[in-house]
Length: 436
Length: 143
Image (cartoon, rainbow over all chains, first blue to last red; front, side, top):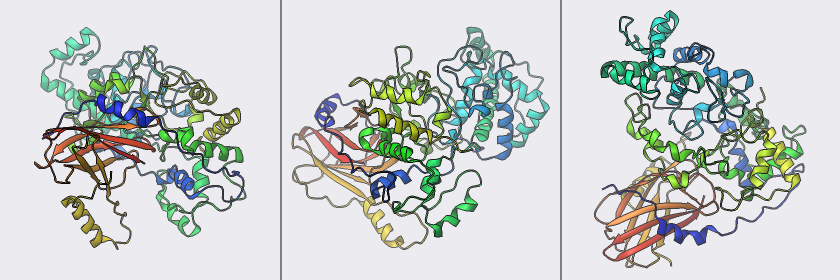
């Protein structure tokens, strides 16, 4: 028997008095530039942030994720400006490799002004949910959405499929990975047909036989999987924080790292003991270390959402940035469930039991209203502006935003950072920039 | 209220015996330590035991079961049970919607899809309706 899951409002009322207890007490202050700077508990938390603990990404819904030929096809698609209504917009137009795979704009602009800020793609294959509202549950499925969005590529899937069929290079690459393109040039496909969009586009889509729609969707899904294969070759950035942690790797274990770092992934064995002395040339400055100390303290609340090697809990929170215009995760819930390209859909390579994130996703709109995905902090100083709406131009503005939160307005309480603490935290966040 | 522990469920016993047999394997990942908690209902009608394969951690799914018993610690069937979690310091609930599936006629349920998304203090509550009455059982723990 499976029981329905409903919000337990009565139970929540019972829980409320327990929610108001104070946070943990401060840990003892120790000068960050002195020996024995971290307690064992603090060092465990710091080590958990190391990129060397990150495993390669896996997506059971995309069997081509690690296929080099698929990645070659995906890279070509990613940079192809022809895949847009005006022939001037590629994925790389907003996710510019020269700009850390983002665009530096407040709101993305393709064919028109979009809705939200462009996130970076470095390490994106490690995400569980995609887009600011998690409206997609896989990287390959996410890669499809911008093509048919009228503000982005505005390029229906029928035109994409026809281009793959007609272009010799694309046809060859496609065949190498997926087999023959399942549509023939003789077929009289409508140019402008897609299941969502303008009335004319939807009508054209419905007019097509079901078998033909399925063929188009197959090509479309394969394109997404190829782009995802390319994006999976972009590991998250290595930072000076990682070097700081690695500098305390025990010498006898250091050699085990070398051969494993081919794609930026190097699961090293780290010392379980906190550093008793700082190296002469620490990768982190005293101020950055002070910021790190603040960052990992429970009462600062940073570590609650920004933990693990990716510095994100991959979850959705209201951090006081939502407005009446954008209800965030709450509005995406049905879209995800009924997406034909989700993990449980016909075009997924996953078994149902491998789709736990989708099967058990939280569907309570009330708690997810104006909630957005926690972004990674890796390389954060190079990906301004910030938040889903690009409303904070600098990291200093982000920190200030949190200190000004009204009680009960977000999933956290406003931390009481002094000016010095804000400066220390900012210094630490900047130390998370890419080294390359 | 202290509750005497119930007999270890079969699955947990299997996990323990498996650990005993493989404990000396070099290079294999360490087996998670079983995590067990007990709590009594606010009305005193029911008590519950939560058995998980490992201790709760933020950011991953947990393999857990819950069993209900009366105040004499005898397994009892319940008519309905609902699960909800809350993060004390932040006023939000679980990131997922776990599903309870009955395993037998004696108040034993499997929990699928249980996940926490933050370190810190969590409350996991079960609202139970049964022949003994309506009750609410809350587990209070930290990650």
